[in-house]
Image (cartoon, rainbow, N blue to C red; front, top):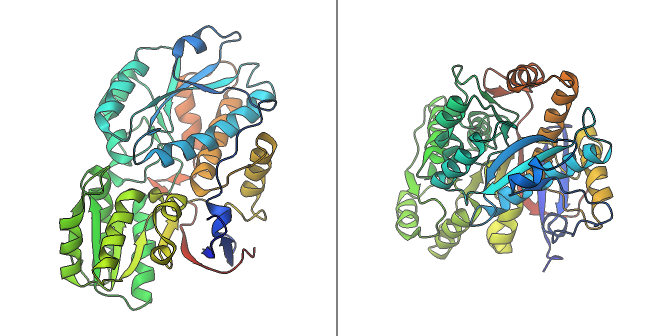
Length: 393
C-alpha cells in the first residue's frame, strides 16, 4: 500500500525550486519513539506536573486527539513534543523543563471551552499553546482574556483571530487570507473562471470563504457556487449535488480531510472532475490516506511551512535531525514541522526572558520575535500538488 506510485509535486517557493516526494514517504506509519531517548513532555494530569521538581514551565493545550480531525492534533503535538524533548534533554530552560498539559477536544468548541475552564484555574499555566482550529480557538477568547492567559501559536489563520484589539493572541503561522490569495491567483493564471467553494459551516469555513470571495473579486469574479459542509461529518450528499449542478471547472474545499474526501469521491462518481484545491489546515498526509490514488492526483494544497523533506532548508534540516534522533522511524509532514518550529519560537522567547519571566513579558517577547506582522505572515505561502514521479530535491 505504501509503495503506491502516487507522489507529491511541490512548487518550491521557499527555495525557488521544484520537489517531488514519493507517496510512501508521506504516509509511512508513525514510528514508536525509542524509550531510551524519550522524555515525557505532555500529560493529561496536571497533578503530575505540579509534583515535579524542579517545577516545570507549564503550558496548556486543547486539541483534537480523537475524532475526524485527530490527525491534525496528533501531528501538531508530535512536532511540539519533539522540540520540547530536545530542550528538556539538554537541561531545560534556567534548569527547569518545559511541559504541556494536554486535553482532547475532538475539534468541538464546547469541549474546548470545558478544557480551557480547567486550564484557567491553575496559576502555574503560563499560556494556552498550540490550540487547533478556528471555531475552537474563537470559542475560548473571552475565557483567556478574563484569566489573562495568552493564546500562543494556535493552528489557525483566521482573520477573525487576527484583530489589533486581540492583544493576548500571538500567532506563528500565516493567514488564511494569504492562502486564499495564493489559490485564486493560481487558478486564474491557469485559466479557471468558474470556481466553486465548499466550506465548513462554522467560524473556520466562513472565515476562509470571505477571504476567497475577496480574492475572486480582485479579478472581477464571484463564486460559481458556495456550498456549506458539516463539521466532523461525511454526510455531504446534498452539498455534492449542489456543487455538481453549478458545473465548476475548479473547486476549493475548506473542511477537514474526511469531509473533503467524501465530497470529492461523490463528485467523481457523479462524473464531475473539477480542479481541486484546499488550504494547509486540511492536513496533506491525511488526504493521501483518505482518498484513493486516482482521486487524489492533482489536488493543490497551500502550505505555510517549508517542504519537510528538503534538507537544504535550515529549519527542515534541524527538524529532521531531531526527529531522527528521537525515533527509529521518524514521520515527517507539514503539520508536525509547523508544531516543531512554533515550539522552537516559544523556547527561544523563554530563553531570552530569563528566570523572571511572566505571562505579560512572554507575550511581549513573542510579539517581538514573531514572523507575523499586522496579523499576516512574513513567510511565503507555498503550493503543493499531488502528482507523480520520484522524490528529487
